Length: 116
Image: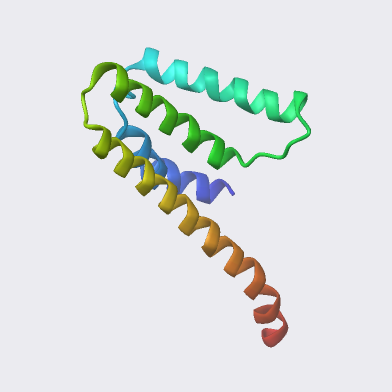
């Protein structure tokens, strides 16, 4: 785990950091702190106050998508079409990760059985 964290730090956050920095105004520490605070509230709600299970990845992507959509509608720095494409691209990347995870989870027992 330590080595994997080291690799992530070396790569400056990797792919997820590219997604976050592609959003409007996330370089500003105040804006990033606000996103972190809201994300923390969402996680607190789903962990402590709700019995509904929630994936942290999808909650974070939903928060970023909602924020980006609101900023597009309020400030019109991007077109609604560009914002929709960005949100769809982010969702497709997360879905691809989900598909790969499920494939690995299903395949690993068979691979272990074949090796062992």
